[in-house]
Amino acid sequence: MAKPVYKHPPFVIATSDKRIKSENKRLWLSITTDKNLKDTVLVILKNPSRATKDISDKTVYNVTSFIYKNSKKFKQLKNTGEIVILNLIPFYETYSALLAKSDINIIDTENLRTIKNFSSKHKNVIIAWGDHPKGLYKEYEDIKKSVLEVLKLNRNNVYYIDKLSVNGNPKHGMVWGYDNELINFKM
Image (tube, rainbow, N blue to C red; front, side, top):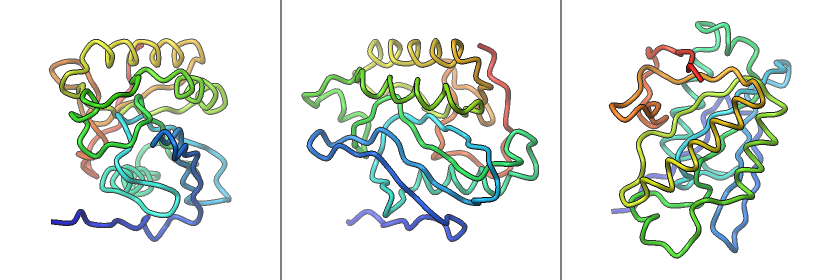
């Protein structure tokens, strides 16, 4: 059965991304919803599934819709005109459990530099990576630790949606509900 193709939501007015096709990875995806609003919110997910500047996927659609629909509810999202999607792991894989079986170095220094660069320019960050992919616990913990250190160093305002998992990970963006709360993450 073919996977559904998602278009970006109708309120999206522009998109751009940085993909490295030869390595099957995406470093960032930028989604503009209002050019008159100047704030950018960074959302750090687990890894990209299929979304590009041309098409969305279930997670990106859900995340952008949540932020757009809740921009009046949460003061931290009030002036958001751009959403930048980043990932702990930049490699495309719809089923993250397959990442452990791939022949790639999951800890990607170019990706960590990208997160550092964006988080040094934009203060509001929502972490939404969910629990570790099967077979990658240690690597995932190392990446999370590095990313949280960068966010602390850059003095970002870090949030998560609804709750943390039993393992202390933020709820994955794919399963956010529109009535979930935006919660301050204690660094």
